Length: 107
Length: 482
Image 1 (cartoon, rainbow over the protein chains, first blue to last red):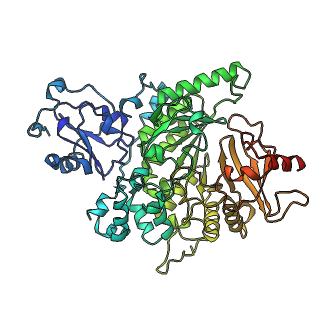
Image 2: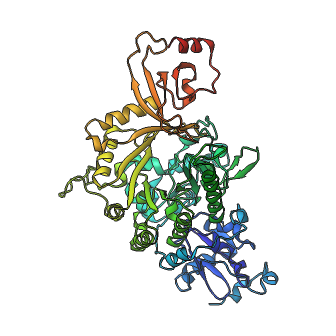
Image 3: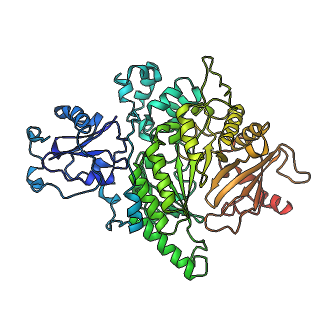
């Protein structure tokens, strides 16, 4: 199993999760984060750490976000590892909870 | 748990630590973890893993879901590919890692028989002896069904000494460092003993969890350098990773070990590994027999051998094995004998074997104390002295206690020993060493799994293990006569 960063991270990218991840398995893109599914150790600490509830256990991933399982696996191979918390994106507040953010995912 | 695990004050590494941390590389790991039963139930586990549970076994487990007997709620189910490959051909390993309805058949026992929470001055720290135990991870690569930290792993609420309920939090570097410094300053100002507890300087930290080896190298390195900088002279790493995922002990890890030793030569690392059964590290042939190694001893699983050899090649660290004796896993004198012999051959000291704790939901795993002693004693027949160093320990809240002897013979003239007696010896006090070496003698009770099963047959109690027990008059009389 793995944990999966879902749609609500896009354009927010708070990065509280990377600070609690014992395995350092977060990877950073221009406007979202992803989890490397092979490196994730299933500890669940990132789920409550996310201020916008963007992270799910693979088994709890909402059906309309199922594509994020593959997206996490794919992008974690390409993007750089992130282990230190940084400031969220400037418009994080406005974008929290906005539907259909997937179209804005920047690679 | 959420933000409560984040400390207000962020830990700032010293410049020495910073220089070391800059040399640390994280490795890449592929544990292929399967968590939960869901993927076994819906058949989405890799094809060869589908046979781990029979349809009948899954059906029985599903029926318990949502009830008090839900085994996944008691302890999350988790396995790595490496452990699955070993368990395929090993009944004991399957018992260790597979969920089983028996786990919740008897929910008797105490929530915290070692009174651990009363020794926790800071979140994530248990301070006993001159040793502090810290929880640095809330999971392992795979989960032993008999784990007695299931409240941490499953994030259950535990009662604090002040009566409040909250899940156990993890240790935070800044908080632990602040506590160590303050404690040791108080000890130094008071001439070597803490004014309130009588404890000595805190000089050793045991990193536990969960398994510290699930932490990335950088996170481990941050802990080690912070502990070393705060004056800790030994760091123990309590880990089952050599059994669950030996590839974690890779080149990047050993490079970090060497860089740490170069930066902090005075801070020693002590690896406390956890092998329960030789099937966890020995290769087997088609008939399921261990294979003689032409170079001596028995043939090991190559990745496990590499992990242990990598540690053993570094003379400034030590490796000790300790394991509980668990029903259906290693209550087997022959397996224990082979394990002790192979450990010692490969530079792993046999430290402790443990009696299972009398924790809620542990009845399926407990082997009676006297039986455990007999099994270990039997296993050590045929071992040389240096191979037979392991002692049998049972953790009283007053301190670690050795089950030193079980005799079938009555003590002449001493009532209560007609069926023989058991000698318990306090190895250490939880606060100071004052009572070390003191003994308690109880009449035999072959069904006993915990101290309280001897409440009515205490013969002699120099160690004070039964000081809090209100004893029936007849027993007190016996004790006076004794």
